[in-house]
Length: 202
Length: 202
DNA sequence: TAGATTGTTAATCGATTAACAATC
DNA sequence: TAGATTGTTAATCGATTAACAATC
Image 1 (cartoon, rainbow over the protein chains, first blue to last red):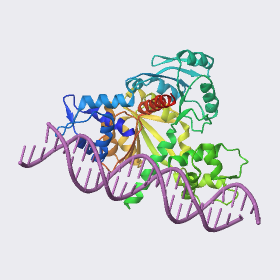
Image 2 (spheres, helix red, strand yellow; image 1 turned 135 degrees about the vertical axis):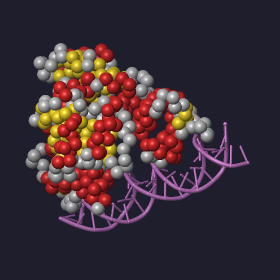
Image 3 (spheres, each protein chain N blue to C red; image 1 turned 180 degrees about the vertical axis):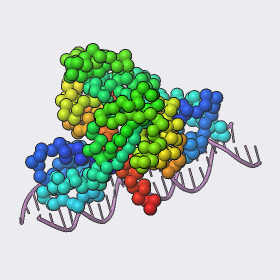
Image 4 (tube, helix red, strand yellow; image 1 turned 30 degrees about the horizontal axis):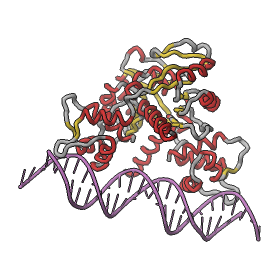
């Protein structure tokens, strides 16, 4: 699944005039196994032509459809600190079929501010907006300490999926979908891998 | 491996006075299989005592050692836009054994700025600092368009691992370690999962 | 001793790879 | 026809789970 996004980015970077791509060429460019790529593509696409490969634009559409980059899904963000603002201001989500409609922050000084065309509201506005717009996805960019409380509030107001940037374990009912994005742990993992790599070479 | 970080966060949130934890209790709190947790713990720790479980603090230390959260590894950041600044200002990396020493940006207006005690330099300062401090990890928080060029520059100056936030495929020699962090794709995936979940319930 | 827990060995499952047939 | 490519079927591999023995 994650590989599909990699294929897609690769396809997008191919010159405009490229019409056909083969699984073989994708595999060698990206360093995956040939058969692996072929299986992945077979899972999402109608199929390619022997000898020439896949029609590039057709394939792009197929992957996008499969990943749902065409329909639009709304989300709200809680916590308009540095990370929150970065997410709010990032224009790239729309390409991926997701739209952050608004942000909320408990700090009254931030209320009314706008980042990238999106407004920051006080927390008291959250319940009504969530319910009125039937928002299903909440993004948590608050401190470790407030994260649990915020997620409770989100769930009370109909949120079904949480993208959690706080480095903490959230206790949630198990019908709620969570994706924990611990950036520090992610960087630490890269560092660990590097250390192992260097050891191996010795 | 990723699960280890989850265990660790969970352990950290346990009350101070807790002395022993069992793999069983971790498993049920976090929703993993019992045996899975036991195997994971066995891989990093000296072992627990039947009947009482693992010594909490000992276990925390063992996981931290295994993940390398004790040694300190330096990194530099390129791109001091919204996301870059958020990373630069995030104090939490040190807990995970990583330290961002400085940031670089091609925009001369940003040069000299300081975020969270870290300074932003012009790109021309990058080579010397990288080499002098023997930096091995580079973080790319620039646009899609500059990402390839920046990564080339990093590699020329001794960087061995890249944490890439640009939504693009980097073409790199294969002794270089890359971790692509496409946040938009990540959110889109959550949205897709949610849609699937809702379908299933019908 | 009984019970909760650890740790190990074998079985299952899913994802990846290898080998080969089919097609333009 | 020959060759590059797709697509499929069987084999391998690794991670997870199930079953059970060991221990305090």
